[in-house]
Length: 345
Image (tube, rainbow, N blue to C red):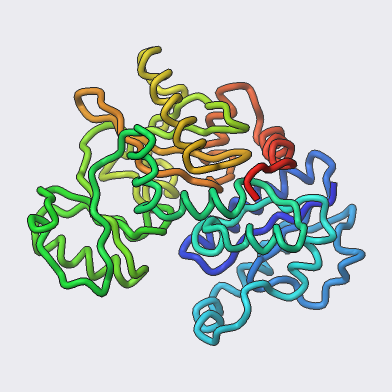
């Protein structure tokens, strides 16, 4: 197959996206596919679309080309240039499939997916509807509650509103402040007092105009992959310090990950059931990853859904697949296969 692995972009998760995309491209090339790595925002200058999907391909050079634009992202966004870079749409139209290795803003929020639907471009993962619903934590938590999926109590705050204390919002300390549509735990703060709460609000509002204020749940952290509507083994995430923030997600040795998680059969079935229900309630398709907390009394709380989870061999979803005997390259092919038909368009 001719495959564009789409990465980069303008979000705070640009670097992680490039890492995911590089690993996916390597895996697909090893399987004999004519995969190329492409930055959705900066594209490929001077590329001949008809000859782009060559048998020989230098993935490291492609990744270095994408990273050469890192310092230009902010200025380019400020200048208001159009989102799709040179040759991006032409290359994606020429491909049999676009593997979405994008993370965060304008990658997981449904905008790229909606554009691709209009252009008739086939891509992996959920469509625009599920992507948009899952990206907005305020909205997704409302959908969880309406569908009987337990989630921490929360309040949605807009930047234009007068500031209040945590107590006035009905929250006790510690409480969590998080950006509404962020990813990789960027813009997430656990606050212990009013001063820290006020600072966290101001910092979070530098990322987005809406912020979710959430009850803090002390307990164990888990994630459940759902592929083609079926749950994968549960993985437990145990940071050596703090919570599963950006540092603990991506710094080697900072987190102990156990898959399958040490849970009773009943707990495993219940969490997997909640994961599938969340996947269906948010109108997700093809695959996703649902994150959970479990408190000291064994009560489970669904936090959020990830429509384009990280895709390196040590990322959570690939680890869950490995526990089932599915290697990384085979998983990449599986995600392409289950993405060929979408219901929600």
